[in-house]
Length: 368
Ligand SMILES: *Cc1c(COP(=O)(O)O)cnc(C)c1O
Image 1 (cartoon, rainbow, N blue to C red):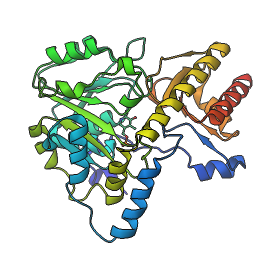
Image 2 (image 1 turned 180 degrees about the horizontal axis):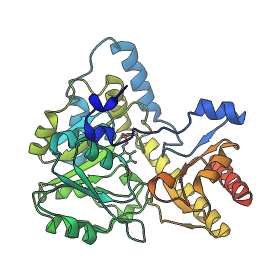
Image 3 (image 1 turned 90 degrees about the vertical axis):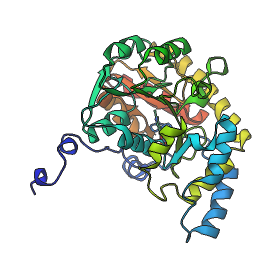
């Protein structure tokens, strides 16, 4: 078939998301039952038991019903948590969907969208899908956004700057001073989308609550997700906080029932489970120390991580190494497709998963 007859040109020019192998496939290929998947920044402690109970109850009671269209209970709870008005929050089917609806609402074919060269791929995807121009500015050597270089690229056509903070896949954070200076200088005609998917993993003394700057910077949009620290990746729930007019505009593109009721129930319950939250953060710190130590012993360089993963330079072809590690049932993310051919992104797991990853990595590197 000649797809060119049907497809929009900007869609023809891009490819779709290529998923890694499923756990079942890896089990079959490696012959191992127990797979350590450290490739998708999932929560190794799995999911809050409170959230699971609430979700089971919701499935039993309301599977035949359409979900609450406007996520009233969840939004009320998030508004209290972030000390904002309920009309400043937009919830969708994962952070991914929030980014998509945001782009659908604001990006025109003539617009320029700016982000880093090595960052979360969603930003480039939605920009291209809308036919907008995506401008990439190199990360600095510490792996975070070089915001003065970004500012130099801002023109009258710049509709949006995506800042991933901490950045995926490097794990680095941009200093508060840089971000506030940037927000001061960037023209009001450009929106600033701050992706905080990993904010909870940042060391307490480095955490900044940018939500409190929303009243000062009306062009700021802050995104969060339940997929990472809350361990709810499968049910899909994410949100953004912004000026109420921005939220109103995004609401025009939303689907009537995009957030399923199981996700809503799980998210509401997860917000109360501080025990699960704290254990997640604790485990993450322990894992980070472990990997740092092991990498130091191996003489491998890595970026300082403020997330639930680490980006390590293995000085070999990352695809080959990741494929070797699959034989041991350890799944990690090679960053070749993201412009870092010698780097792996490894999600922090449980202690035994982390040990397995290091043993497997050592073995794989020996064979290179
Ligand atoms: C995981 C992630 C998201 C959103 O994930 P969802 O599962 O769609 O909520 C957004 N941004 C970054 C940088 C991420 O790593």
